[in-house]
Length: 303
Ligand code: SF4
Image 1 (cartoon, rainbow, N blue to C red):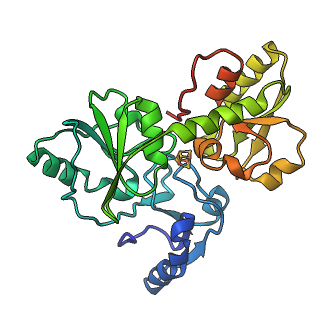
Image 2 (tube, rainbow, N blue to C red):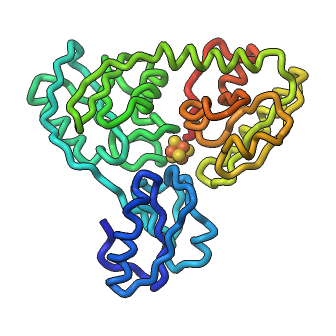
Image 3 (cartoon, protein in one colour):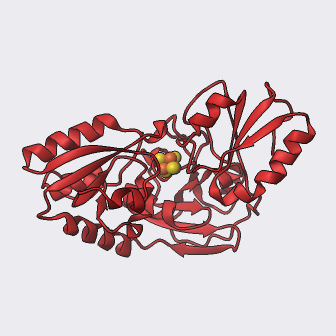
């Protein structure tokens, strides 16, 4: 996993939570090659989440498992790919499909495409905005690979349903989620997700003290959107303040006086983690819907 040669002696090592247990193994490998290693224990939710304090202290930071969002000569992004069988059993009625995946599975999407084309499917595999590196790659905050899709259905290759649900809301098309690890295929149903979002929005109704969360993580920081939301809130007689925050946790929000929060940081905090918070957290688009400025709720995206 580790690149053969690194410039510098003191290496920072940053891994997402799911891979942190491999930290000692990787540090051992690096130190056996003569490098000195400092492991970051802080959060690493994506390439948007660089440990900048550690970066100041080291010659080079190895950021494992994500593709570049923030560019720096001192950051080396090391992808982490999962091997899987690309001859997937796909028996679906739609013949024109778009393939998407998360970074761990993207490297084999061309093979999946070839295989499915040999089975009679017409397969789109598109490149998205600069925030995503590989054709077909989606992030929890970016579905730009599907922006111009003409497919009848989307096929998500990967584990979990979060990105497949996002693709369904983004495209309003039928989405299949195929897990290459257990070879299960399922049709994504977003009904509960949508109901839950409307429930959260309704909890904000009639409340007039809002905190607009602004991330300290450079790759999630959307200060201009936050300022715009504050202005809109004021026009609708809602008192709103910008709240600067790094990792968003219930403990940090607990002592603040706000009735609800509008999250301009990572959209996964809104969509995936909302049950962890006692106060409702809604997206910028949901806030505009709450104020009657949007007719329906749209997916929050970071371009
Ligand atoms: S903002 Fe959230 S979804 Fe987007 S890359 Fe960062 S952690 Fe992932």
